[in-house]
Length: 507
Image (cartoon, rainbow, N blue to C red; front, top):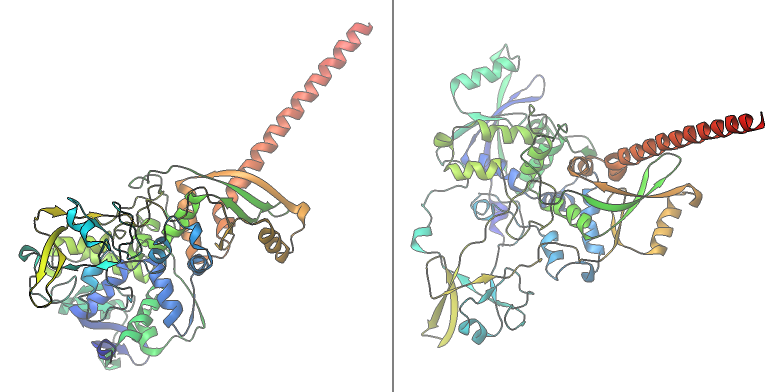
């Protein structure tokens, strides 16, 4: 029996019974920890969870197509055997903290460690190989590393005994309908009532909720599609199709910098009559960029898109709440607050060529310890964070990228990724009812500005490439027209000069 399905988190909600709206909720650390954990969830995990467990269709733009492409691509198109699994079940960089939640909706398995199947190989090495995937090859003997190894934390790394993940156990909070979290104080309560236009205490009514995993998944969904998530949870949202609320894209000219990849080149095939992009032909750089979007935590996506402006979505209100709350009074540590404000990519998920200013969790320094079991008379190994004669060396599961180098791909306007195939392209173009003479090819280079546009459009649109890159085609056409006009003008002047010369010679 799965006892986790029986766990419930209490939530007291104060509603305006006349207007059928939520005024505020009172919550303890258990609920706020879960709410804050939404910021750490990778986009691929959110798409997977809500696609599987939601009873309503959530319009994830083209993210669902991108996620589905992982299932349809063969192993030979990925850099390693582990890459597909890495992207299908993206790990959470705050995994250790999220496993302390009373309800953890992320069903991604915990990080495991594996050593070479040949125990002698591990025993004789000064830096034995270690992997977080059971299909990796030992860097010494190349055998598969399927033998699991246990981890024993050192005494200095032991838990402090406190419960919960991010906020202090005794902390109490008020939560507005738009998921803005503030300290639970009488003055704050009165402030919410005044800002909500409550003039008669008699219209207020308490409602006690018991939230299980299903309700938390519903709240996650409403937090990214609605301005009134608590009301939608309490009263039920009637919409059958829910669109993601995406922050307004701000100018990224002066942001914290970009990654180490300044440009990505590709061939664009577009319709000449309307300049809409039909598909692109590209290499592993652009595919790595697209697939890496699935690995970015929700909180980091919102901060990338919405720097330097007031919150416009419920998720941004959660993020703003973390920023506003006093770290000493309400968080277990400064590191916990920073983990929520700037969630990193999980270990090994940062591509060597990247466009966005992203960082990943540093790998732990682990040491190999010999183990002898008196009962079974079997030798083995276990890991600790403490010093030991042999330090493990982690084997990279993806070699710094997800797509195989030199492989060629096509990407449709709605981000369906497929291996390059002439007949598949013809079939796709035929399905769009595009005449062959109406198709033009152009080579373009996209930079950081286009990368931000593609990220935003992928969340809200099924015309991602057109909306994100069409301006490059139009600019090139404009330059070409200017060049053509200049050439025609130059040719006309030359012809006039020739005419004048001919007339002069005739005279």
